[in-house]
Image (cartoon, rainbow, N blue to C red; front, top):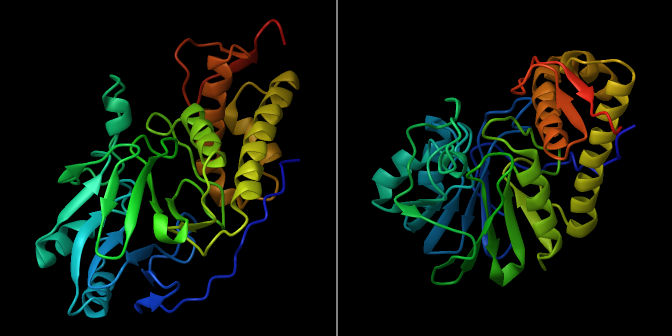
Length: 304
């Protein structure tokens, strides 16, 4: 049985309306609900007058128009991208053109893996390249806000969180969400990096998280620890499945994800694959067929 995570499924919002949610934070939610996006992409606006926009969202005209209406008379000085999935970064292009501003991000899709020579399959917003490349610890400033860049690879290799210093708030993108765990899909997704990035958050003093999908997460330390524990339990489930003679990931998923909609088993299999790679790296598992693949066969290492 996986660790119980105290998910938060209550989400008060109105599509297309830029709503004030804290003294320095506003949010408008795109109408793109799905099994991957919850109720939709929440685009955040930080500050007043000269503002930062975090995760402008999908290339949806209604959502882009809502941002233009809501920010009439103001200026976007920074467009910040947590990562380059299609529900996060594509709207940066029309907003950049409208406000003649710059985009900020770790790099194009796969940037954190390509630099190490890993080939990345197309599957993100391949058209996006940030105007300004940012790295862990970089500080961005506006008239009434200060943001620290917090590099959190795992969900994607270019995933960046953004800490609003004035409110001790962390915009967590898809790294930590209130309604669901994150999908970690190799080759760009990396479970070892993801676990390291979760551990990094435990060392910080943030008091509230604002994910791109769903509402605020208040009890951040216990919540992150629950995420870590959940992934460690998944690893134990994989080892138990292998011990029971299941060599294929597709045979493991139904028994591991008993409370998950079977329509999501494909995504679950990719997370199991990511965990399997971590177990391979630690020497607990071996691949029967050489290079690990989603459809490959696996065994416990002899010492197990």
